[in-house]
Image 1: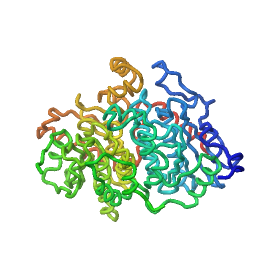
Image 2: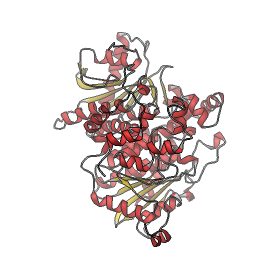
Image 3: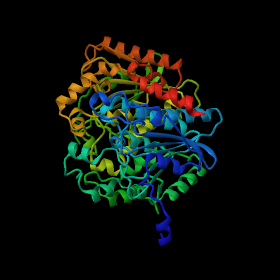
Image 4: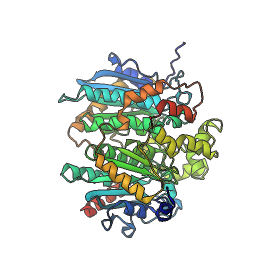
Amino acid sequence: MNKQHLLTSKSFIELSARERAKSLLDAGSMRELIGPFDRVKSPWLEQQGIVSQADDGMVVAKGTIDGAPAVVLAIEGGFQGGSLGEVAGAKMAGALELAAEDNRRGIPTRAVLLLETGGVRLQEANLGLAAIAEIHAAIADLRRYQPVIAVVAGTVGCFGGMSVAAALCSYLVVTREARLGLNGPQVIEQEAGIEEYDSRNRPFIWSFSGGEQRFKTGLVDRYVADDAQEIGSTVRALFQQGVPASHRDERVTEFLNMLDRVDTAQQAESTAVRMIFGKEM
Amino acid sequence: MSEQIISSRGRTWFEVLSAGGTKIAGLAGSVLAADKLIGSMPARLIAIVPDAANRFPRAARGEVGLLEGWNVARVVREVIAADQDQTTKRAIIAIVDVPSQAYGRREEAYGIHQALAAAGGAYASARLAGHPVVALIVGKAMSGGFLAHGYQANRLIAFNDPGVVVHAMNKAAAARITLRSVEELEALAEKVPPMAYDIRNYATLGLLWKLIDISAPECPSNADLATAQDALLAAIADIAQSPRDLSGRLHAKNRQASRHVRELLRAQWQ
């Protein structure tokens, strides 16, 4: 990276969810659906004394990418930790369902998910979990027609049921700031003890769930700089590749064989994970 | 190696429902699968159960971990492949009794999120390929465990029983993370249906297809077994008349916002 590039590059992480969505769509093509002025808010937060937000932390942006119809679903990590309640979850699931329906009618709508989320919003517990199941279902449907691309840029990361959604996508793009994992560090420490997982040890956490490690162990597809232009060109290039021959979650025998090689008598080390899961770079 | 069988509702119901069927060999000890006729309908039954000898110690008590996710994916995808050219697709029955996903360093390190996606994705693929997929919730259906094993089913059936719990996180952990006491959380759960832990409150969310009364869920009678089999057959028959998506879950009053959002999206889409 040269000095000129540093001076002209624009951070993706510093953008709001709405700005991130806009930066991925063709210039001038973005149209937001159920935007803040529609005021579709969580029906469950206020009765618990929690301030709601006019977009429930989810941006649904329609437009085009390289001229093709697209929808970008961007989670605002700043609202309730990017957690998914009923409304935010229905916005993402519903938009993916319509994109799949478009494809069945010959309109090649594709989707990008910008995931900054801790998963289920616990104040809407079961409706958040149900919505996430519906997001999984919709990704599994849409990816039969078009690639579904997820970007985890940071700094919230992607956890809980939404890490499972990320793992169902056709392609997964991360930065060094990104973390991707099922259980948040604090929850693991609470459930299993500090010997198992020290939630305050940042290098330790990134060594397992950080973007670089996930890339080097083949659990994501692209490792990019925090640069809006680079992320945009990466997403466009992945759409050009089309639907992959097999999705990662379909490679059952390969993953079972790799897990057979794990010495589970030892605690996990990030170097061992790279040895077993690692791809030749 | 001594083999220690830990009893669980999941194992009990797998055994009574699959009795006389063909067990699938070569799986992790925590994943049970068998092929069996339910009435005249060929079905594959799948359960995740405790396995004290689990190679991954944090998944020994029935949690859904790495081996569980990938092994469930294997037995579901085998069925999809085997029935690819059949006009009648075998039913797939997930017997659900999962206390949680596995919480551990090994699990995160080797991508437990991907293992859960493998299982959930396999069930979703089976549903999209035309297999009737039914989840029978006999005990706990918690969080990531349920997302992987059951929540992608066309129809959810649960026992109307205090031992049946569906939730995103156990009470103690949910209280800590939302900065509440367990008592405060329980008081809120009384007033806010999506936060409730009991199955009757869960039923008001419209996600369940049927609640069934079982007299002895830990030790089922012949009548209990017949009740469960009848419900499974009724669900399979109902699926045959319906779209293969999850839209059947959207009708309850407590899911108004989920419907409203979809209607608005559709109106604004073009």
